[in-house]
Image (cartoon, rainbow, N blue to C red; front, side, top):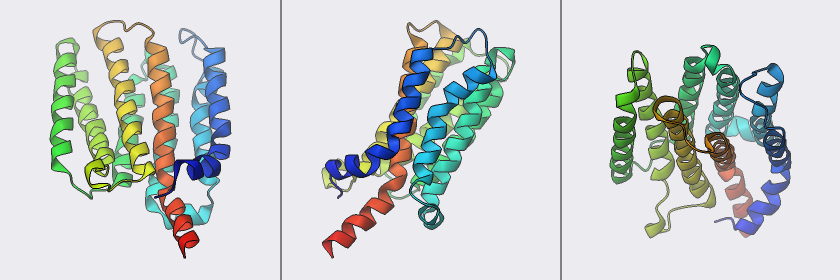
Length: 238
C-alpha cells in the first residue's frame, strides 16, 4: 500500500490550485441573493481545478483507467449542477438535481460492484430511508418522487464507495478510504441542502454545505489515482 507521505508528496502539489480556488470562494462569499455568471464561476472554480488535477496525471492514464474517466465526467456534471444551483430560486433547482444525479451514477460506476458487501448496503438503505422519512412530510408535487430517486442514487453511490473499505481484513488502500470519506461528506452536504430547503433553516447551512461538498469532491477525485500510485509502488519493489 502506498504510504500517506508518498501520497502527499506526489499528489499535494497538484491540489494546490484547488485549495487556492476554495479559499477564494470562502473569502469572496458572494451573496446567493444576486446570482451572476461571476458568482457561478467562483463557485465552480474549485471543481475546474479538480478537472486539472486529474488531467495532470496524463491523457494516457485517463485512457487506460475507465474509473478515472468516469470520475472526471462526474466532476464535469457537478460543475454544471453547481452553476444551475446558483439560479435555483429562478427555477433551476431541478436542473441542478439532475446534473448531480448523473454525477452519482458516474461515481457509482467508477467505484464498481466488487466487492458487493451487502451488509454495508443494508446500513446505507436504512440511513437513506430514515433521511427520506425526515423529508417526506415537507415534500409536495414532483419533489416527492424526485427527492426519493435522488436519495436512492446518492445512497447507492455511498454503498459502492464504502463497500471496498474492509478494515478488518486489511483489504483497503488510502484511495478506498478517500472514496469512502468523500461519499459520506457528499451525503452530509446534500442532506443539509435538502433539510435547509424543504424543512427548516439550518444554522450556517451554506458554510456546512460548501465545506463538506468541496472536501467530498477532492477526496473522490483523489480516489481516481489509485491505479497510478499502485503501479509506481510495484515498479519500486521490482
